[in-house]
Length: 452
Image (cartoon, rainbow, N blue to C red; front, side, top):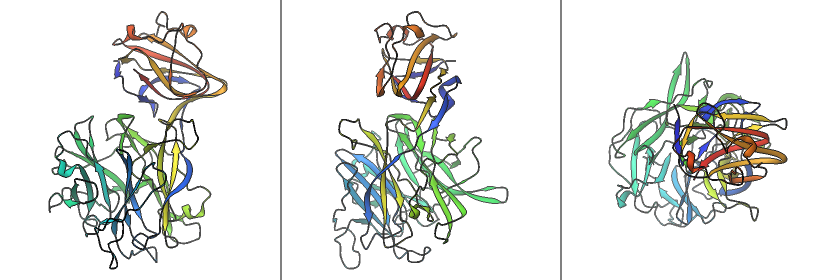
């Protein structure tokens, strides 16, 4: 049976589209560390600022996070919700909002300090077409480990509970518990933490549920990771990928509770891993770390390396380069008087590639049905490498005019390289019919395909 991809962008995140491959591996790519984006050095922030949310909203970027400080790596002095914003996603400002008093002054960027929500407040902008303007922004927040509550705001700054009663009570909520509107499924989706029992071991894990109105939620169910090993997942950071919203991506923090800090202190080290899904329930999770702690000793400290919820698109640092994806990761947690977020970057769609070595390799897709007239590739080769594409019928025979020998050799590095056969890129005659794509690759990475 052919899989209808229409004009959707499809990424080679795992085997879903692939019929077979020869000398082609699926390779996880890793973001590149950049500058420190924000330092949490205000008195109401401190060294245990945590649970960051970042998203683009019109011409600005918004950031939300917990503000708190710990002197002994166990207790925190206070908990508040803080807000920052940026014009470019790189340099962040902390506006004086005058909303919440802290130590006798309202000259701060605190937006919430009530017991419900102050520990872990995760907002989003609601794109539901039926959303009421009074709750254009929504959030989930917990009361300790007890339950999740729903919040609303008309401006993303001034917040209130949507109701006094909790909306989800099945879980253990000491984490960043988040929600969003899924336009593909036409419902709200939430992800939260609970403790899952595997034999005699209790492991931090993730549950999910859905809602039509953000108030009444289905019974939460556990995520399924296939044959991935049992590991502590401290947060989930799941959301639809903005360039291919039918695909969910998650960046959970993997917690190893029995490994000791670099300075011999408390047990518990972390890195970040990558996972993806097409239904929001069954995930392909990589065992290889997405972000390692690296050479900074402060990242080998308990609970560091958490990625903020929300990869965002930003302008490249190098003039003339195309936009890239920015992610933000925690460092300096539990040490000194402040902690900070470092920005990381990667190419658009650049999470996983189908990679062929210099000796060459081939990849054949399953039968696909597409719409549109031109096939484009997000592809990268070396100066000596190349990619060529053959369109086959459902039975595996080359379609006349689209055989491998008719394809112009592709080399270079492009986010949307249009494929041409016999000097033409027009594939509209094949639109709506099942086809297979045969990729012959040499020292190349193929990240995604898209028909337009």
